[in-house]
Length: 388
Image 1 (tube, rainbow, N blue to C red):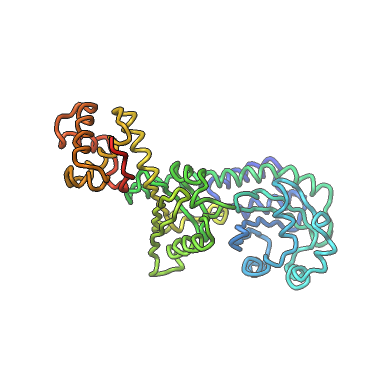
Image 2: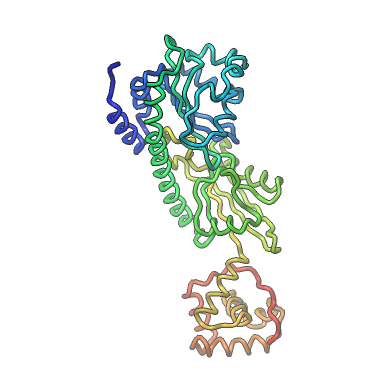
């Protein structure tokens, strides 16, 4: 059979991975080289029932019907989802007789133009994302030849790396966009996420990763944002969906407060992501464009960070640090005393220590110094310290 040499096809696979375009021809060349009748690349987020297929020799109507409905009836689906990446599987491994008796085969696949016999392997099967590639036997053969098996097996590692390269490039672009959007909405210092349809996490900053590692109030499960209770998860997902293009004029997002196990509150703000954040390509479903920007403020954590900073920078005690932070809010010493639940005399005593440790002599100078250190002005009222 005439066609491209294997090394040419390998080179084409990596070339199309960079822009994410041109996969149809590369897949056709692969099918010809392996002696297959057809080839299909299936991309999916199973939990959201989202499916996309690149299959250059298939009837477009067949592909549309599969993505719209029949993928849910495919009895090979669970076997593929359970298989590790790169493991080559035939219909025998999945269950030939069961497949041939299934509704999926008799009502749909039998008329698709493809034979039942095929080889398939997962390229991605992790974090709620799934990609598999399959070669279909030719109709005149209706069987998998050893040459087809060997040729496909040799190509699987390259196909997987190409998909990973494309996903890594898209991930880098998402992270760049996240940083840019956070700067535009004054979200510096807050946990920030770019989220796709259904609450699918696409990118997160270091502060968000810290929240997830705590496993308190909000986290990620199978690639999806989750809260402590199903009701909270549903509310957050609904706010994210309200930012999608399908929401039309209702693209507005919203706010949500979540209680932490320590009794604090996470303040969540959901904003629509700018449209067209990523140009679509073959991996659009594995790394979809962002629907929403999610900002999470953890006032208690920011307070703790501020107290540590003041201790390390000026040698302040926790009580002195709380007075310093309250002075940043303004309103005078009596207001500071009232908010902290201490006497004005105690505030004056702490201020004398603050002047001594910072080298300042007046309250205005002290406030200016603290402001120049970048301490936030919107910290929550701290817990009252003990009188000293």
